[in-house]
Image (cartoon, rainbow, N blue to C red; front, side):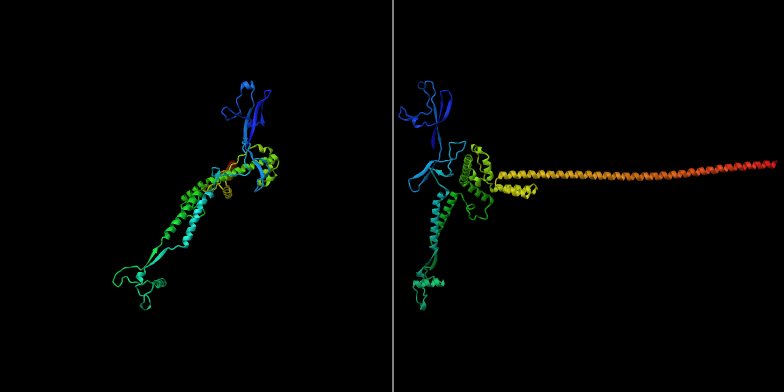
Length: 464
């Protein structure tokens, strides 16, 4: 850390000036009457000493810096040392400086850090010792002992010719033939030894079980330290394990490893902040070509056309990938929407490819909204087509009805015309008959009158 001093004073013209000064803090320290050092920064002004003029105010500021050097290995010499260039600082905390190497200790106590592996080393050593003892005992294991009462067998004549065998021959005979002949009573009909051969368990099996239990307890302690269990340490869990129990085991492991995951998250976030700060420095220096492969050409072009990037501060956020139960909920929602016909296969593929659950939900909601709008538009088109079809059918029916009415009218008119024409013909025939009859009657009267006149003339002539 470096200490910088800023001075605020009033010049002879009454203007306030503020800036850095080379005034050292050591020159402002004094020994008071009690014999201790006293800081004279921002010391209240004495009117008798200053005579009404304000003294300059000195403000110390501590700024973190990073120094560099090149060390000759295995020696006490170094060269090319000094303050590092292009140090990582944020605009909002310019006094704080980050290292180029990102470090994070999730377990830090008394200036020392210890990881999970270091905590597991004593337990691992104990587990290895227990395993070696088990192997040694397994190689030398005597699970049972065969107890042979030679006193009960030597009295039996097993040898040829009725001779008694010695203990060695008795044991060879028993283990080669698996036959143990003996007498339950002796010559005096007593039973001193009922079982001449018995099998007794040794005490090594109990010790072997104790060592095995010790090994299993050590493994359980290692699981508790690491946060793993049978479902998360690559072992074979019980096939009958219930789903809630398995979920609880997985959740307990996640809780135990939260510090490690949080450390990993902090490292990633710190690295991202450092990369952005380095890019800002590169843009300010006009040297962004070196990061083209890491950031991509489009990003580098964007940085090149934005020279004021270095004065901004960017927030880096990290979002965790969705958990298994969250993905199951998303899959269930996809299946429901698929059964309703609101999504297509390409929508499901797009949603399932998203690692961000919030983005996946937003995409799903957007796709569902678009599908609903398409379905509404389709239904509206169907209604419009149906309305147009009904209108056209009504128009055709009306036209056919008009044609039918016109045809019926023409038929009626033709019928009426025919009836009227026949009636006219009949009436005309009647009139012609009446005229003819009247003419005949008239002619008959004329003839009758002529005949009568001629008759009268003839009579008169005869009278003469």
